[in-house]
Image 1 (cartoon, helix red, strand yellow):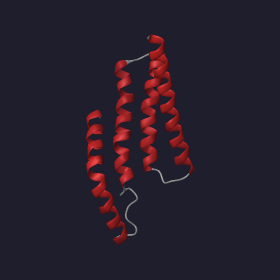
Image 2 (image 1 turned 60 degrees about the horizontal axis):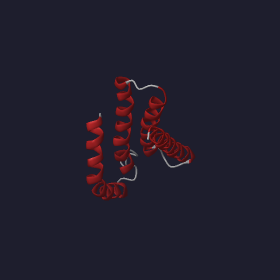
Image 3 (image 1 turned 90 degrees about the horizontal axis):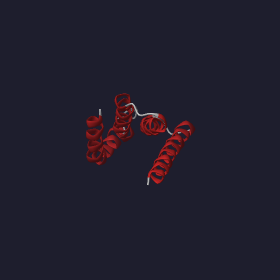
Image 4 (image 1 turned 90 degrees about the vertical axis):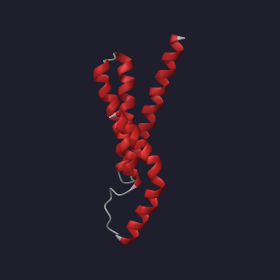
Length: 119
């Protein structure tokens, strides 16, 4: 899953500019083009794969306590961010986007705290 996440990220960086132009051309010719035909869907794939791979890895590593919580927050943030990419713009997508930011900030704060305590 991790390799798929990295590869899909590379594809995203290479394909997105060309894809954006192609999608715009298709939508002008076919007004009812599928909603999945957009750059956000392409962006969601690496986020969801990376989050899922990281969460699944925790079952193998079996961290305890705060370390497990930090890792699950990080993996969940990636999953939710990927899901937000698939959602139509609206209040739910905005609220979930805010949740992603909060998860990242809290996770980073816990990492900083842990590093300061260990040094």
